[in-house]
Image (cartoon, rainbow, N blue to C red; front, side, top):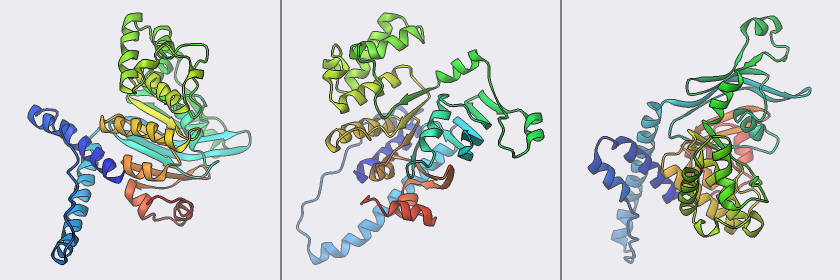
Length: 338
């Protein structure tokens, strides 16, 4: 699994660096795993193993640095600054700031009740923020009213002002959301679950919507289920349909809210493989997950949240394998992520 995640990051770097070089692009598309060496280990081989492992570690480190260099130069798809959210008198988000670059995969981990899902609901406009700013590209969704903020100070009162309806509609077209519980329309076929939002909301012509749906179902390995209804699908199949529906609108960023929490281990693997394939294709994603090994292998960056704040963030391997904060270490100690 780790090898697949490392190769995914290397593929993203190669493809982004080769967009102006067709020959290099073709080479990156053909990268495959090296065959496993089954030669019996001898003392001489054992002596060679350590330098080879060190070289591999150096290669992995160089790949991560190159990937970070590419992301550092990428434009921001989504940005929030100093965001607060309360439920009644209970603060849930306390000054969250986050920027996600084009092509970046960000995993958000942390204990239940730490604010992860609420953050996603605010980012996808299912909840309003009380204070702070939210932008998608150059579209400002919400911003602090400076005069009100100055007047109220740190009282916690609402100071964020949301953009007009037509601006919010444009912002909604920038993202897709995959829920924990699939949220498919039970009375509609798989095909209509994908095409109806395109036709009714995005005004895509029916034939074009159908063609896009079939392409995505094929990509998910579900073309043969186009006429099925959700009750005829397994949990993993339902979640793959939900991913296809989110992708159909061609979003700039895709959000996942614990996409495997309702699945058994075997079905979980199918869904995680789909998400990993999307990472290889440079889909910008923010993933709330409790799958620590998966987060380490697929994400460029991991954020650990607790108590409504970002406690720690950094590269995937740094946060999972060498966390700096004691709270992060205590949380990760409850997981096996070898």
